[in-house]
Length: 119
Ligand SMILES: [Zn+2]
Image 1 (cartoon, rainbow, N blue to C red):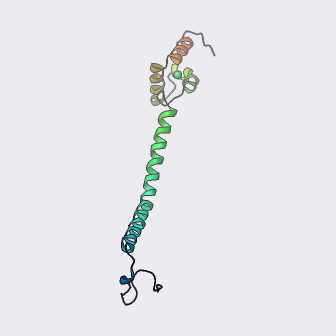
Image 2 (cartoon, rainbow, N blue to C red):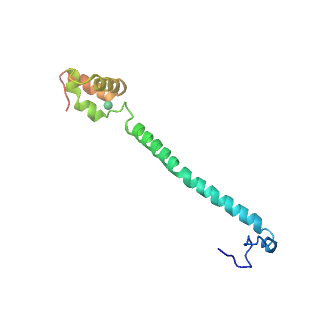
């Protein structure tokens, strides 16, 4: 690759630096620094996006399950199995935790147990 004589830089003889206008070297150094930084940003983009996705997913899971990862509808659907001890311990634990925190479901469950299912 040969450079036109007017361009600042190294030729085969290494003799073109005298033609450099003032500030050209600084501009070249800055350009190469910028290029290096852009390559660095490119390398970091993958992990950063991955981390963002994990954070988004975590936020999604937390916000969509405000009461112990089980919705009121799910709890109500399982009232009969829950009261008959037909659920596995993990699910029935989540339901009783939900009943602890959710007055509406607790009320509905009490109604069901007293034979006044309002469904
Ligand atoms: Zn509820």
